[in-house]
Length: 170
Image (cartoon, rainbow, N blue to C red):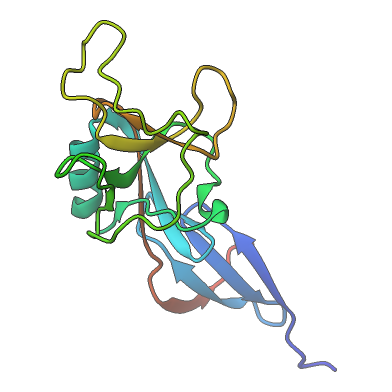
């Protein structure tokens, strides 16, 4: 049929595009500038290495929060980065940045969390922040590790903005 619309979904750096093939006008689900759309959410990958607390504050300033993980599908990025999980208030009571209790666990084997103070006692406060990434070359990026709350990569997440009609980019 001549007027039948076929929808395609394309991923762009800062938006998810749903484009009609008949007139080039599309619906766009927007993320803020510098954020990337993935799986219904917007992600910000900071170029700066920050502490866990600095990362939490940076995400809030940008209108999001550190990543909260509820399933294996939420753990796609393959780099070391902070997640929004800490036991800094009460040792061994892990809470998400929204104060929800930890229900799903993806700690690395039986060895994490270990609240390690460092090989030479360089982290006397222990490890109170959680991060994604590998441990000692295991290449298991789909695991959590507790870590000293010093500087690593920040990944923030927020909800995607509303839909907007406009001319599609070809």
